[in-house]
Length: 196
Image (cartoon, rainbow, N blue to C red; front, side, top):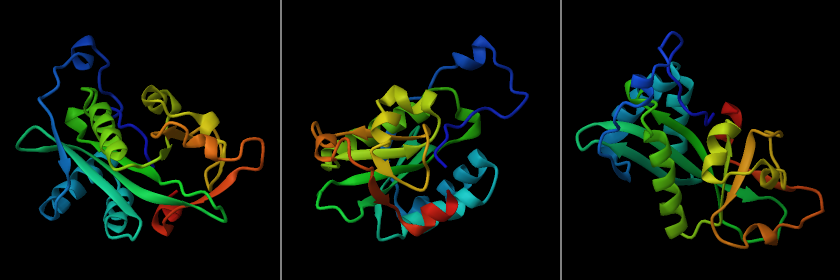
């Protein structure tokens, strides 16, 4: 769902490929005129239509939170989307979002664009006073941003296991979750659960 994009099989893992210079990036919220280009980018990155449809559904969801693109000025090179998650049967008033999906144009992968896009998005979410972000993805990739499977275990979700991680954006936000008790149920928009 939110896996980092990797080169297709057969792509040489050479120092030249790993050290290719990254373009100068700008980050901005996606606009209405970006939908077709984002759809094409997501389809190319995941090589299937499911994620493209998911992006469209999440964009029009009541739980939509943020959609950010990375550009080189003329082209959209990366895309990330966030939707709100809800604490079920809880008196806690935490603002939580889930990162899904993250896409980078295949010919621009392995240049740090995905990482820079995630960092820019997390900074914007902090500014928007989001308390926590959760993600389902590769721990080796997402732990570099501070995501933690141990914090993810505080939640009851459709995706148990070490691939479900959480990140505290507001200091002390996780402290309001009852530690030692049963995990707190976290619910998501139906389109995201169906895609899981």
